[in-house]
Length: 73
Image (cartoon, rainbow, N blue to C red):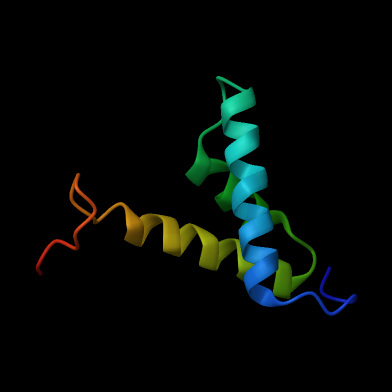
C-alpha cells in the first residue's frame, strides 16, 4: 500500500478495520495484542510505526467518557 502511494490515513483506517475484524472473528485475540505483536514483528519499520500509531490512537480514544466527550485532564 505504501509503495502504491496510498495515503497514511487510508492505511491506518484499513489496519484498524482489519484488526477489528480479526478480534470479532476470534475469541483468543485482543485489539491491543494484535497491534503490539504486529508492530514488534514487522520487518518494514514504516508499517510497524503505523501499527504503533493506530494502537496509540485506540488507547487515546479509550480516555473518552461513555457519552463520547473528552474527559478533562
